[in-house]
Length: 234
Image (cartoon, rainbow, N blue to C red; front, top):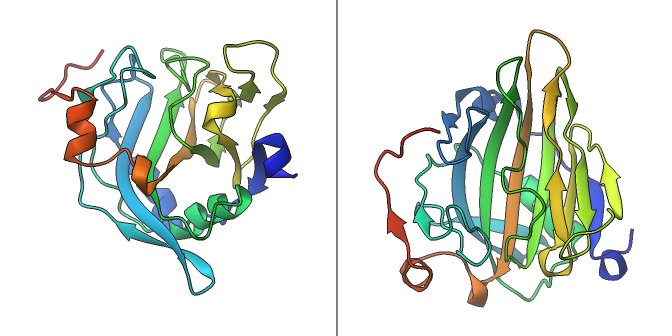
């Protein structure tokens, strides 16, 4: 698929190691998702193209903050998550190549490692905010496990809503990356395929040119960061 023409691409990502896959089972509960379904870790990196490949540099750990412009519920709130405990470079590089990122540009990225769970008592809400954009240059969603679930359909639609022009289930080790300013994105809820319950393991990676980075004290000041200690789970 021609990313420059379509503004999105579906592609294969390198599988995570067995150790990295086990990490999904150790993620801490995310109290900001409006339910009992989401577990998460979060880290930020600088990436650049050197010696013929994309390379990552881990940035000092900071809270995750979204602009109030794009998240009216928890925008401006310092959300504290434990850092990711493996190197996501191969998966990040696959996304950078699929989106044909400018090799002369330095980017800042946010990387979320997320498990969404569901059973007869837990609604597997994949995207709490519904169809939306995040205010980044590019957003990538990569799927690494679909265990005993149905649903979780990835959707792309015109900005402001309307009929989806992409609506498909991504399989394990598949991803989609999109130009965030060109469309809205969403994923439908997941449901358990049996009484056992199930989960969907994903990585969400957002890319911003370094001069538009979503990182650091200046970004936090400009977006009215509110500090919350030990938020109460919903």
